[in-house]
Length: 145
Image 1: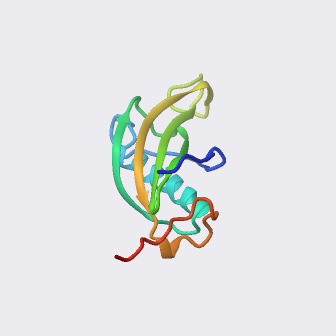
Image 2: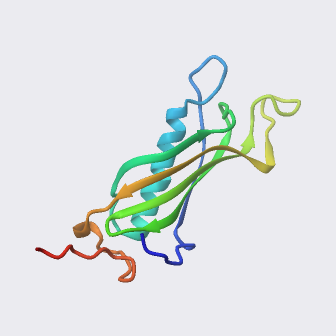
């Protein structure tokens, strides 16, 4: 994967999450889905195509997320190959609304936010789908032997 300045390639999704479990903990699958949403947004920023997830090299759940929490999920581009894209995903709890304050309607912004989950993932965008990719990042067709 080529060395480039990729700092401008960061996609963010913010949303309130909900739980269907008795203990109000949000499903890890919901957090994984939010990683996919942020990653899709990042794919459109770079290539103009959603691409496909290939695999996760690392996936860590670091803190519980509860019903009513507000999450900020980011996907940051780390490296670009011919068709592969390496990304860092993070989910931070930025506000909590359960068991906070004196009223049922109470909530609190968290400063600092809580890092709840982190992952490193590889996606693939086929060459013929890289229609918005900047020329310096665009993959090159392989030479035929």
